[in-house]
Amino acid sequence: MLLRTEPRIRESEVTDKSLWLDRRRFLALGAAGAVAASAWPARSAPLAGLVKSPYRVDETPTSLKDVTHYNNFYEFGTDKSDPAQMAPSYFGKPPKPWMVTVSGECGKPGSVSYDDLIKPHALEERIYRLRCVEAWSMVIPWVGVPLAEVLKRFEPNSKAKYVEFTTLVDPDRFPGQRVAMLDWPYVEGLRLDEAMHPLALLAVGLYGEELLPQNGAPIRLVVPWKYGFKSIKSIVGIRFADKPVRTTWMKAGPREYGYYANVNPQVDHPRWSQASERRIGEFRRRETLPFNGYAEQVAGLYSGMDLAVNF
Ligand SMILES: Nc1nc2c(c(=O)[nH]1)N[C@H]1C(S)=C(S)[C@@H](COP(=O)(O)O)O[C@H]1N2
Ligand SMILES: [Mo]
Image (cartoon, rainbow, N blue to C red; front, side, top):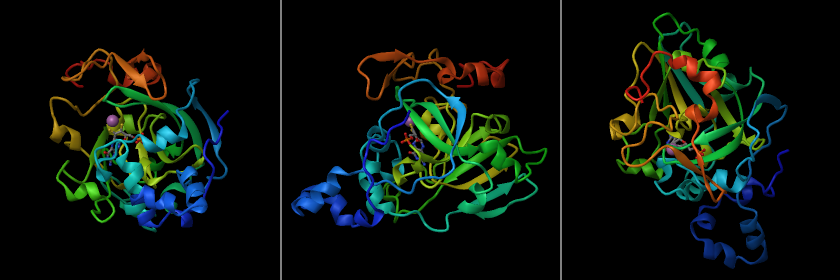
């Protein structure tokens, strides 16, 4: 059973940039300000009509507070706390309508709005493990639609062997993009059969509500058997391709971050072991599971491949 751990406050109460940039001034506002501060994070609209998917791990979900305050989203900065701090002030509401451009090897390319992309599908709640390449993990109750169902509507052709995803570039919204920290835009990719696997999710929410900016609003990928960096946020581009893309992290460190990035306790990162992980909110480390615990479902995608070479 999932409990809402944070009270809800209206978005209009939290959009004043200065409130978020200066906590002390915020608190100095007195009682009203203090109430709003304790109500952080602002929650967004609840998502109606969720179908509970059988894809749910029987492990305690990470708190909403941690899921929304301990983030990797370099477009907002490199500290774990940057996305939650910067997102409300700089991102505010994502541009409306949010458009996604679908291109490449498919029968029906074009630009579609968020509504046209998502609304034809039933929203599912799925509880997945998320394992970051940095050796920490969470359990997150996502809301989303199967990626395969969305991709099929664009009719990938016989040359489509890979799918490439791109994050919005907008340095006005993403202060991290004013610095060449990574080669923007953030780009990720999957083999088409990986993208079509039923576990691959296009997420639009978590904990029953729309995604907050720090988690990749309004739409992001969730590929639970791969390291978290494959789960690209704030997607504006989907391209079907005959070749794998050179991803952002492959460019940043080709020896450290491979295209496949399957969670693999036997292949260490050059700078640390991947054999165990710290579950956020827990004290002891736990063993990392092959394919993040989803081996039964996905190992077949890689039969015959040397996963130490294709890391
Ligand atoms: N565009 C973009 N997507 C991104 C990242 C990023 O920096 N930029 N970080 C990735 C990493 S390293 C992880 S672990 C997950 C974290 O997702 P979460 O903050 O929602 O838990 O997002 C991934 N998606
Ligand atoms: Mo990550």
